[in-house]
Length: 416
Image: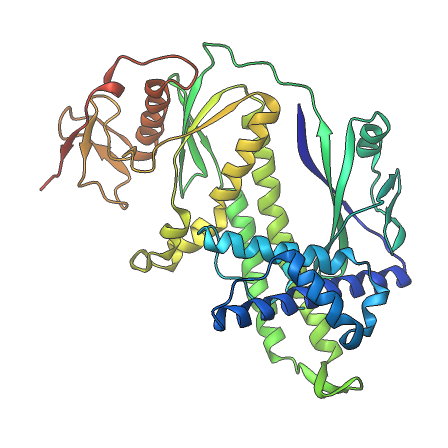
């Protein structure tokens, strides 16, 4: 089978290459904001949003007189930026993301551009269009072996800047061996996402808790340090020197830029701690050759509920359940596992795993589930994981039907 995978390496550019990379980042960000301004103008006039191709044609006409620096960067930088903008509007109209916003130079997420075309990889270098051969800090043997064996081809290269470091992500189409099919008796595991532990897994023989305490403590420790550095940044004088190219603009001070790099490095460390945990956990589960039944959580809606307080929203964002489930899904396709999503309105936490009764009076603060029908008492997360497992068996995740309580009609007990 063929899958799309990304190979990420840290670059070690020289001084001239750093300038070229910065120019490409600025060009991509400028083109994105230029296209977004045209889109907002079209919306105000009641016109149709221009496509990426239409924006690129208008850009080619506009840049000759207004952007003389365009000859110094690859045509792919603005072209791919318009495609990103078109994708951002599509995600917005389909309800998957908010309205596109203007990009800012000080945000790491906005300092990236994508290149296509002739991209070559050697064990210690990456050849990029208009930039040249850039040294990488780690060997690329795994990717070069795949390319030499004609088991992979490079689709694009995304170059990003995080604080004072540069990275390249090579998106490749890779031929990977087909995973062995799941056996009919493959274990079905219910996965209940938890705020205290990261997740609770139940396979019928026992319960496994994936701990998040150490990772949470590391993140909180870095966040406390981040708050101190952000306060120091706010006390720095930002606009100090006049810009010789623009009399209406002032350049930031060196101390402000130095402190900004400290803040950006802490943001990167927090991301790395979380991503390392998510990748290791999702890979371990995907390689176990099991069927995972997960909840269809409305994470965006859960984070918007103000009555539950900011602590819940922070915990939800901290654990990144959506990213973890996305990783688990595509890695399960690679390694032969399967992910099944339960119906969003399936009451896994309020249903008794023994008799099937539903207790509607159960609140989020109740950590123990008590069945008003059969008297079962157990941890609510373990009970929810068992119900998700029964849901998977009842629906027939691997061709097996459960003729027990999972198929019985649920009886609701509203409580007092």
